[in-house]
Image (cartoon, rainbow, N blue to C red):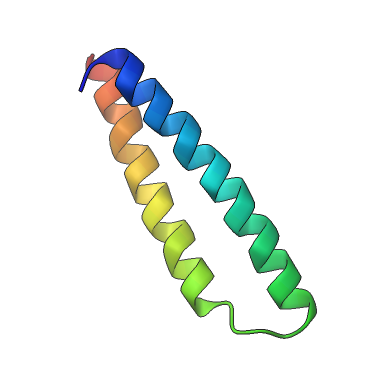
Length: 58
């Protein structure tokens, strides 16, 4: 994966992360089950961390 691909993927993941955060807030306000969203956010954070490390090396 080249630098541009990594940057593009990071932007995509950030947009997904923001969307999930909004969904999480909505579910919290109606006392919904937030566990699956929390798990997805954690996975996105891990992937973003990995991609940012790859970007530094690229």
